[in-house]
Amino acid sequence: MTESQSLWLIPILPLIGAAINGLLGRRLPKAAVSAIAILTVLGSFLWVIKTISALGDLAAPHSEHYFTWIQSGTLDIGVDFMIDRLTRVMLLIVTGVGLLIHIYATGYMDHEEGFARFFSYLNLFMFFMLTLVLAKNFLLVFVGWEGVGLASYLLIGFYLKEKFAGDAGKKAFIVNRIGDFGFSLAMFLIVLTFGSLDFTKVFAAAAKMPVEAHAGILTAIALLIFVGACGKSAQMPLYVWLPDAMAGPTPVSALIHAATMVTAGVYIVARASVIFDRAPLALDVVSYIGLLTAVVAATIGMTQYDIKKVFAYSTVSQLGFMFMACGAKAYSSGIFHVATHAFFKAVLFLGAGSVIHALHGEQDMRNMGGLRSKTPQTFITLCLAWLAISGVPPFSGAMSKDEILIAVHGKSEWMFWVGVVTAGLTAFYVSRAMFMTFFGEYRGKAHPHESPFSMTGPLWVLGLLSAVGGYLVRDLVHSIGPEVAEHGDHSSLGFIVVAAGLIGIALAAFVYLFSRGLSQSFAKALGPVYHLVYDKYRVDEFYDAVIVRPIQAGSTWVLWRGVDHYLVDGLVQGIGNTIGNVGVVLRRAQGGHIPSYATWIAVGAAAALVGFQILSGGAR
Image 1: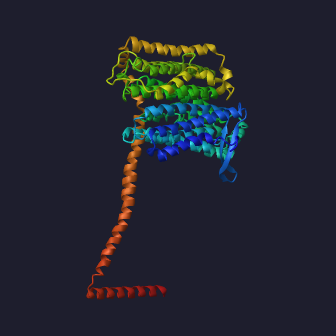
Image 2: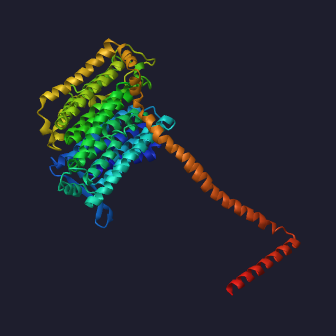
Image 3: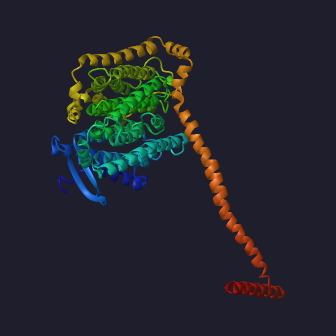
C-alpha cells in the first residue's frame, strides 16, 4: 500500500467493525463489542487526519482509481475515491462527530437487547456515509446514498418488538426511495448529456455551458438532484420521515441528524454547484423550498412536547437554512452551517438522550422540570448547544447562521426577513424546551440521576465545539469557495439576526418562566390554528388519505383479490381441478374389471377408426 492509494482505508475500517460485530458479536462480551465499534471509527478518524496532513491545502483534488466497475461503449465508471476541500470538511464531521456518538452509545445502549447488532448497524452507517462523501462519480455516490437509506431503516426500526419503530423505519425507507428515484433520473440525464458520471468530466463540461435563461437540460438535472436531496435532507414535501425517525435509539437520532444522512442532500447540492450555478430557476426552487421548510418546521417545533420531536423539527428547519444558502450560491456558508449544526445538534440529541436516561424513558417535557440541579453536566452542555442554535455570539451557530442570512439578503430582501423571523422562532422553541426541562419544579415520577461518563464525556467535547467550533472550522470551510466574501461586510444585518435570537429567548423566558399560564391562554385563543400546527398541519393525514390508503385499497382489491386471488389462483386451481377431473375419468378405466376393460378397448378402437376416417378424408 502506498501513500497515494490509501483513501479506501477510511470507509473500510468501520465496515470491518460492522462485519465482526454482525457475525461474531453475540459471542463477544459487551466490552469487546464496544471496543471494536469505537476503535474502527477512531482508526478512520485518525486516518482522515493523517491523510489531510499529508495532502496539504488540497488546492487541487487528490483522486485514487481502484478498478473499473462498468464499461460500455464510451461510458467508463470506476470505483474511484477523491478528496478535495469539500470532502475534507465532510470527512472530519462524519468521523469526528460519529466517533463521539459511538462512545456515547456504549453507555446509552448498555442495558438494551441487541447490543452487538446495534453497533454493527452503526458501523455500517458510517461505512456508507464515508463512501458517499469520498465517491468521485455520481454512481458511487448513489451506492453510499442507498446504503445510508438501508442503514437508517435498520437503525430506526431497531426495536424489533415495537410496531411503531418498524412503521417509522418503513416510512423513512419508502419516502427516501421517492427522492432517490429523482436522483437516479438525474444520473440518466447526466450520462445522456455528458457521456460520463465522473465529477471531473461532468463539471468541466458543464462549466463550458452558458447559464440557462430559461428551463433547460441543466435545470432538469439540477432539479432532479434536488429531489433526491429533499428526500435525504428532509425538505418539503419529503420531510415527514425525519420526525418519525425518533423511534430509533437516541444515538441513532444524533448520528442521522448531526453527522450523516441528512447532511448528504446539502453535500450533493454543494458538490454539483457548477450545474446549479448555470440553472437559476433551480436555484430559486432550492431557496424557496428551503425557506418554506424552515418556516413550517419551526412553527411545528413550537407546539411539540416530546423533547426529541422538538429537536427533530429543529433539524428540519436548520436544513432549510442550509438550502437557502445554497440557493443564494453561498455553498460554503451552507457547509459551514452543516459543520456547526453537527456540533450543537449532536449535543441537543445526546443531551435529550441523557435526560431520557435520567428519567427512565420519559420523553414528555410536561413531566420534566427542575433537572438542572439533578443532571448538572447534561444541563451545562445543553446550554452551550442552546445558545449556539439560538444564534447568540460568539457561539458557533451564530457565525454560520449570520453568514447564511446575509447571503440570502443579497438574493432577496423579503426572504431575508422571513429567515430572520424563523431564526427568532428557533430561539423561542429551543428555549421553551430548555425552560420546561430544566427550570421550575420537577413534575415527573421517576428519580432523576446524572448519566455516566461514557455519555457526559462526549457531551462536554461536543458542547465545547458548539461554543468555539465555528472558529476552528471557519477558515477550513471558507476555503471551499470564495462566495462568502461577497456577503461578509454587512454588519448591520448581522446585528438584526442576533437580535432576533435574543428576542426569541426573552419571549420564551417570559412565557415559560415568569407567566407560565400564558402559553395555555395563547393556545386557547388561537383555537383551531394552534391545533392545526400541533397536529403538524395534518400533512401525514393528507398523505395517508390521498396516497397511502388508495394504494392499499388498490393493492387489496385489484392486485390481491383481482389479480392474485381470481386470476393467478383461479388459473392454477382451474388447471389442477381439470387435471383432477380427467384423472377421475381415467381412474374408472383402471377399475380391475375385465368386462370394463373390454368396453374401453372397444370405445378406443372406435375412436381410432373415426379419427383415421377423418384424417383420411382430410388428406383426400
